[in-house]
Each structure stands twice: as structure tokens, then as C-alpha cells.
Length: 545
Ligand code: ADP
Image (cartoon, rainbow, N blue to C red):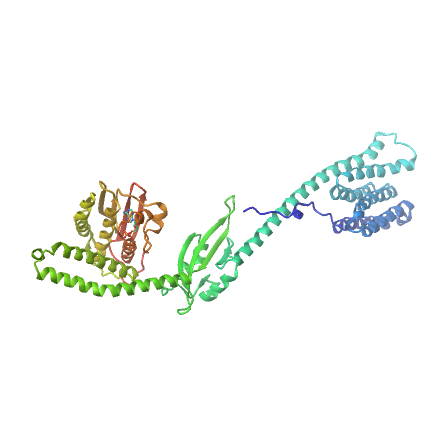
């Protein structure tokens, strides 16, 4: 967004009487010093008519300065003040032929005329200098006859001419600089006003920190969130700041401001502030601010209060868990009775084998979905750690998916070493592989390939499931592990699924202190990589994650 500059900012600098009064004061002070010198050396000179004329002219110029109003049509008359001063210098110099340096007094009005007025005033100092130089000639009634005499007449006007032009150009440049500085200042003031108004108009808590960590801007909402969090300016952190589970206190170094000031940029981090019972859900964002030239100017943090949304999500999850529990009990009973039916009767003879096996398959599928819903709704994924062979699990999982894969026309290959032992929950890890392999087969068109590999790299084990399937767009990859997320094309194709598998896979992996990544190109296939530590951290030992 461009920032408009007020017209006043582009106007030339006003030349204040204040400034002119300063110049005249300097002139008077110089004359007083001259007067003191004369008083000490030849007191009578002070009463000479030329000296008194000089003094009268100075007094007249000073009165004019104070008589002319600082603004208005008469302002132009001010040019007379330094002009009269120049005439006064002529008389002072004439009084003191033994003190030619007294002519230097002309410097003050000359600088003033050259720097304080427009181009039209420039001839005035030069003519003034000629006048000052000619007074002795007029008194003598004859032009000089020696080159030295001519030099004495010409040197002052020549010096004044050079000085006038130089000072005028320098003053013009200075004014141009000042004009630009005023424009920049006006733009900065306007930008600051816009930033403040914008930050006060949003509900989110917005703060801006300079590179040295001091806060340059904080809106009202930041004070409210800081109050709830029990913010301590010394640690730049709150005492009542908790992670997404609402229970785990976040240490100061993991809180938004400290992370942001360390140079981290992030978006969408959920945390809770406030004492239990009075907590608000906040989504924290932070980013570094740079100028167009790339200079770092500070850090901005934004905290959105999303408590209503978080409450709605919590309600949805509680509802899902309740409904899943309610459905599981009768479904367990149906599956139990179906088992009794198949074990206790010859269904083939009864002509019911196909129907009962269809009921059984669908009931088991429903049971698996309910299991997923319950697992996804469980805030904490529980794992039972024991020595487990992941290579075996991968082989078994790949074998189990074969019927489904051959029906879909997809080949599945396991490139797995004989044994890879790690500390983990065998049942849960099987769930991870089953989910990833079933996705790989489900989202790979006929004729495609799926390869599962297991490898060891130092202290970690890596399991990859690569397919040549439909792939996942970069946008979808960002939401892939969110509960209930399904890509649009998958929903449009009506492929079965509820979008919980990957979120469960992620929870299980993280419960093992591991992590999962995906690389994929739409239309070319996807590779999911699960990295697990071979040894789980002992209770009380610092965790790597
Ligand atoms: P579901 O498979 O039940 O929809 P998941 O959580 O397992 O749920 O997967 C979520 C979404 O991720 C899927 O709907 C699909 O859009 C995408 N996805 C997962 N695995 C793959 C894959 N191997 N290839 C392409 N898309 C995938």
C-alpha cells in the first residue's frame, strides 16, 4: 500500500524571523567587540560621525527586523535588514582605516542574504561590497593611481561575489535535503499512525519489537492477554502459558515472544493462556520485518484468541467419542454373535455363507472405523514399549495388504533386512504400517507399484512407503496429518475413508519420539518416511524432541 504525503510536507522551508534575529544578534555582538577595541585604543573614534552613522544604521536595521511581521505581505522588506547592515559596515570600515579587518563584518549580512533569501537578493551583497569599497574613494575624491589601490577596491566585491554564490548553492542544497527529510518524516508519521490505528482496530494482540527487543508498539489486546498469562517483562514470558493439552506449562524459551526475538518465524501455533478454569486459546504467529533493501527492522507477533473455535472443536471431539463408545458396545455384540453363528452352524448348508460373510466384513470395517474415531479422539496416544522387530512387522503388513493390492492391480514389494530391532509398541507400529500401506494401495491406480523399505541409520530406524500413485499437492501436504482431512479429488472420487488414518499414524510415531514426513508430486506418487529412535528415552531423561 502506498502512503500519500500531505501537500504541506513538500512546501519549501519557512524562513523564520527567529533565525534572522539570531543573525542580527551575531552582527550586533561583533560591532560591540569592535566598539570595545576602539574604546580601548582610541576612545575619541567612537564619537566620529562615520562610526555614529554605522551605529544608527545598525539600530535602524534591528528595529526594522522587529517591526516587520513574521508572515504577511511585508515580509519581503526583511531583505533590507542585511542590506542596511552592509551599508553600516561601510561606515565602520571607513572610521578605522588602520583596521582593514573591520570590513570582515560584512560576512554576516552577506551570508544572510545569500542563504536566507531567493536568487533575486543575490546582487544586493555584491553591490553592498562595491559600495563599502567605494566610500574611501568618494572621501578622497579621486580614483586610486596604484595597482595596490585598485586591488583594495576590487578584492572585497570579488570575495563577496564568490562567497554569495557558494553560500546560495549550499543553502539551496540544504533546503532540498531538508525538504526530502520532511517528506520522509511525514510519510513515517503517517505510516506509524496507520499502523497504530490498524493494530487497535483488530481483535488480535499485535506487538512490534525493535531489534534490541524493546516493544515499539502494543495494542490493547496484548495487555489483556499479558494479564491472563501472568506476563513477566523480565523473562518476556507468562507464568500461566500452556501447550495445546492445556496442562503442560510452556517454559519461557518456548513462548511466543522469546521464540520470535530469537529470530523464529512461525504461524498457527496453538497455546493456552490463563489459570485452569479461566483459559483462552491463542494462535500465535511471528515474523521478522525487513525493509525493501533487506535491513532487519524488528519482529512482529500476533496472538489470535480462538477460544470459541477451540471449544467448538473440543465439543465435536467429545461428541464423537461418546457416539463411538455408544456404537461400539452393540457392534461388539453383533460381531460376537456373528462369530457364534459361523462357528456353531454350517452356513454353506444353510445357504447363508455369502450373506453372513458380507455382514461380518462390513461389521468389522465399521468396528475399525469406530476404533479410529476413538483413537483420534484420545488426547494422549498410549504406547506399551517392548523390544520389537520392525522388519517383521513390515513384512507381515506387506503380506496382509496383498489381497487388496492384487484386487486393485497394484504390486507391493518389501525391501526389508532380516531383522531391525527397536524399542516400540509392536501393535501400534503395525497400525502405522497398515495405514500407510493401505493408503498407498488405495491411492495408486491400476498398474502402479508400492515399495516398503526398512533401514537403520545410526541411532534411528527409517521406514519408507513409496507409491507411484495420484500424489498430493503442496497445499494438501500441509494439512495431510490433520484429523478428517481428505484431498478434494479423493472425496470427489468417492474413495472410502474418513481422513483419520494419517493423524493416528502421526500420533503413534510421535508417541515413540519419532517423526513422519512426506514428499510427493501430483500424478507421480508419494513417499511417506517414518523415522523412529532405536531406543526410547528413559523416564526422567531429557527428550531430544
Ligand atoms: P483416508 O485415507 O481415510 O481418507 P488418511 O488420514 O489416511 O485418511 O489420509 C488423508 C488423506 O491424505 C487422504 O484422503 C488422501 O487425500 C491423502 N493421502 C494419504 N495417503 C496418500 C497417498 N499415498 N497418496 C495420495 N494421497 C494420499
